[in-house]
Image 1 (tube, rainbow, N blue to C red):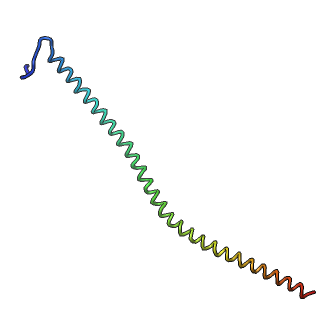
Image 2: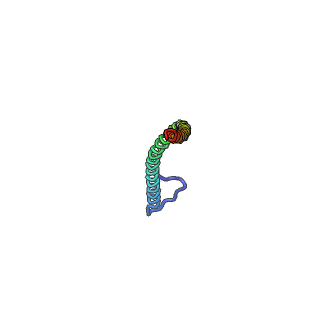
Length: 110
């Protein structure tokens, strides 16, 4: 079967050329299949990363909401510490006054 515009020789040049083209075509198909497999594998790996990133995002949002409550607790602790400091200073004043009263009571007994 003759193809118009193609040259033929008795040495089988056309068949060798076709064999070379078939080999290149087969190699190209193999490369495309390999590329497709690699693409699928990378997509699966990145899907896992996407799931992890989504989980981290949810975790960070939960931490933010909890940190808002944490700030509120820190403010409450600051108020309690101030009240504690006031009570300690008043207690010291009361102890000083009771010491003075005790000394005065002993002086009166003498």
